[in-house]
Length: 441
Image (cartoon, rainbow, N blue to C red; front, side, top):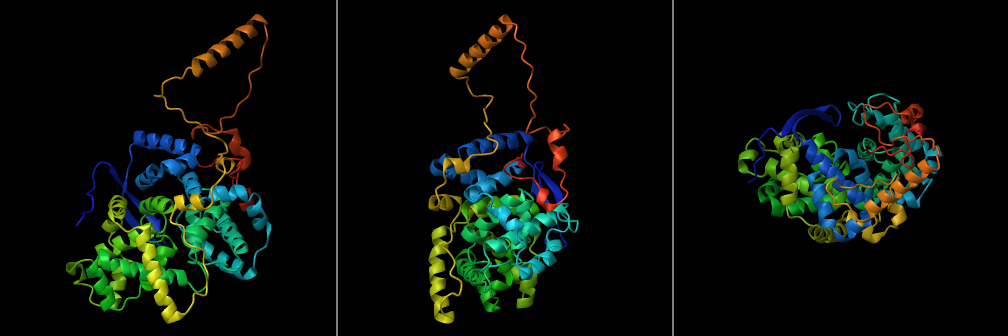
């Protein structure tokens, strides 16, 4: 049995509030600044040649997602991993068109009532009618217009809120579309059939991962939908401490739904996986209470990430069990009412199904990263020589060239920037446009 890593100098304590009013005190991992800068450079290099990295070095992309995406690049990385960037480029002005429409009054009313419930202690969503709540409304309303047959499901709100903490509204909309249509198809349909099927898959996989936990749940007839619905539909955003949520999402958006299954299996295994732990858990009610208040040590970022990576539950395992559960469903319930598209198991599968063009992946603005340790090429001295010659010619001809005014698109936080003045957010329609201003760095 693996043990939770003990606190050390490379971990810091933080207090995070998630869900409604739950306070999680957790030991979050602190990454040395030198390591963080190195990871940022590597991610910038990958994002500049995303199609090549996904085609030839996907294993390395997966490993870097498992380590955790640098916070400054997380939003952009999620946009690329999900295929949201490609969708946005192929559907230009689509979000603006949806945003300008009034929306179905039935969904608009429900969405408005849900806004204040999403991360109420986060500064972005704390103020009623603030820019965070307005953007959340815009994204969720746009989705109901994009998929009128599906409409709105309350579990989509925390998903969209997490995305808005990392990217502008338009990008958040397209990533939400990809999560709902590619990663978790059918989860948010009216009958919730897909989540019920995945609950049975989780239960079946638990038999192999933790027979003790499986027997206990079977003994007390505890249906999977009673404890895993919020876990999966909200992608653990209302369950785990914040540092763990982000680490899980980094892996989930890279590798697909198997990460959610692994998280669920790890939590069940360590909460109900031994007779010692079950002594105080003699009935259905006590078991539910235990699963609602999972011990902090099992949700700690480093421990959870290690267990997720070590657990050997693959896409094939999930698909095999999916077909088995589908047969049983038809025998007991008949055909599914919601015909969902096939599930895509992560970024590689999405890119393979919908190959992007280089133009779709082009960054605005393009960032070129040169390592300070890289050897100079033959072209660089030649370029320097040409520049020197031009300067000399200008001197000889006594030409005076006025200096160009340049604005640094990435000013340091301490520098007051003229770019920031006209971008004061006064309403939801004035939030930063992802095409014009890079908000990720």
